Length: 231
Image (cartoon, rainbow, N blue to C red; front, side, top):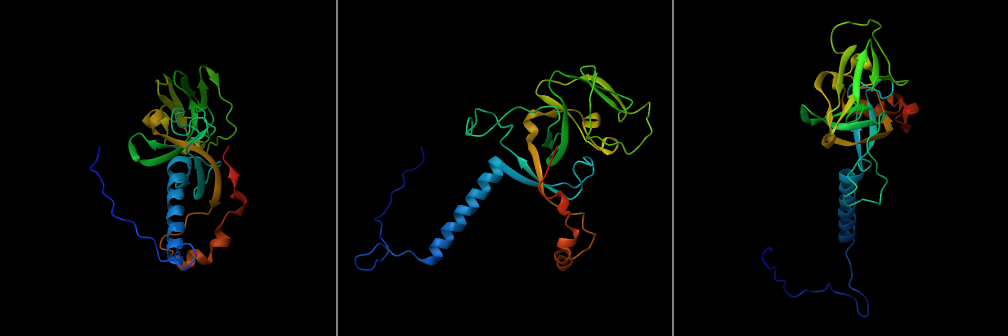
C-alpha cells in the first residue's frame, strides 16, 4: 500500500444566496477538454487508430497516401477488459492487418494474412499454395511479368508456419517486403485490422510548404477513396 494521504478541510466555492455554488466558465471548458483528451487516448489505445501508408506494397488495394482506420480490439484477447462487450475473433486468411515489424518493432507494417499457425506455405512461379492448394487471390497484382527460377520472390518454401505466428504477403506481390524475406509475424506483434480509408492524397512534393498544402487540399484529395473499405 502507498503512503496515507491526509486531506484538509474542503471549502466550497462562494455561492449566491439560496443558490448552488457558482462554477467558472473557464473551469467548465478545462473539464471538457480534459474529458475529450482522455476519451481520445482511450479510443486510440484500445479501440481505433489512424495510420498513413508510406509504401506501395499493398497496391492497388491500398495506395501510398491512404490514411487508414485500424480496428485494435478485434484481435484483442477475450480475457481482456472488453471481453464479451465488443466483437472479437482470431485472424483469418485474407485479413489485411497492421503489425509491428518483427525486425524493428518501432515500425508498423500493413500486409495480408496468407497462412495461419501449422499451415504449409509454398510459392511456385508466383502462385501461392497453402496446404498444397493454390490460392485464389483477386486482390493481387504483379508488376513484373518475368518469373524467376531463383530467389524468394517467385519461388519459396515449402515451410510450415510456426505456432504463434502468421505468414503475411503484400498485394503488390512483386514489390513487397514481406514474410518471404524476413519470416513470419508473431501474433504478439499484431496491432489490428485495417477497416477503411478515411482520407487519401498523393504524397506531397519535397519542400512544399504548409500554405501550398492547404491551398491544394481539395484538388489533391482522392475523394473516390474516402470511406473506401479495405478488402
